[in-house]
Image (cartoon, rainbow, N blue to C red):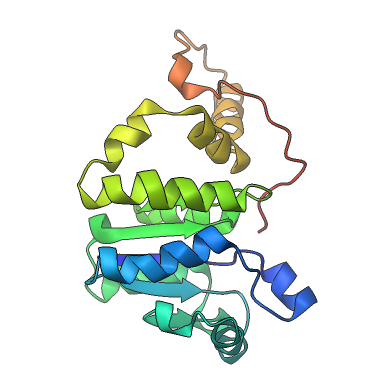
Length: 198
């Protein structure tokens, strides 16, 4: 199993502050993953230069939490995911976690699972991942959580324009929606004032 983690999350903050943003629930998840799933390989993708990203993660005390770190030298997110698949990793064993819309799209194109870390709700996103989604994934039951389409998960997905894109496609193709299942739309409206970073 491989977890490609934290892709380009808060790279802007890293550049501004010169350190890795510290989310306690994220650190707890990263440290516990190696015990909960000892055979997992956690790979970090960053849009920063590889050496800079590695130094920042080491300075944050998280260096031992990942198997490998990849910087912008490795290419765009889609190229990195394709390289992982070409290296022999099974598509079903990859979980992508991050806050980048470009990584979300790359994950969809590669056919791998994606768990979004919502801007402005990072702590809550990591908590749900650690306490609910990831344990269910290890049991082979993550699909149950996905199928439940909980309001929070729907909101996270809407942050990546999932629903907006679907509506745009329908509009462009002039499709007439014959049914409107409740699980396809967010049940809550939450203005976070932020959009995913490219």
